[in-house]
Length: 177
Image (cartoon, rainbow, N blue to C red; front, side, top):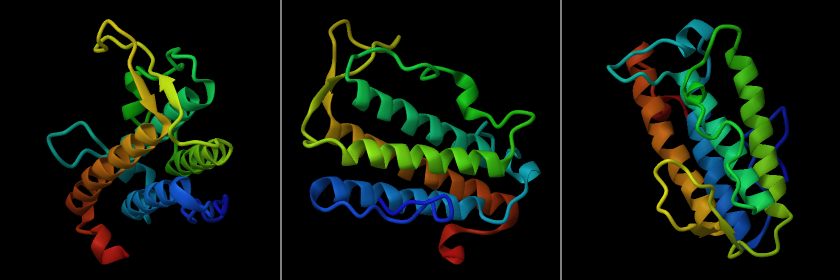
């Protein structure tokens, strides 16, 4: 892996399908991180639309998403990971800093990459944890589908973050690239 604390968006060096999928996820992470570049902690918690979403909250949620989905992949036991349904994952709370959230996001990215690097087959099937909205029978996804879900989730929230940032101070991902 090429991700490091100094460069949390460095692209993974795996070859093949896993490398391609992790590369796509790293690109979406990079777009998200552009939206929080140069903002203060106060700006990270500021709501700029009718939505409750904030830049800090989005970053915190995507960190939790990577942690939870990586745990689902690694354990493969269908158990509900701690914090998966915690609604505080969407809010940057008192005592949290943007710098701290960025460190946690980089650590989650490294764990995702390390976990995927150790798996021989992205087609491996794992049971999903039961949630209040789950069907009565156990649902199974491939690691590939989970990774595609993480890419979609990150891309969707990077778009939300771009709107929030542009409303906050006029900056946009495109202009900051």
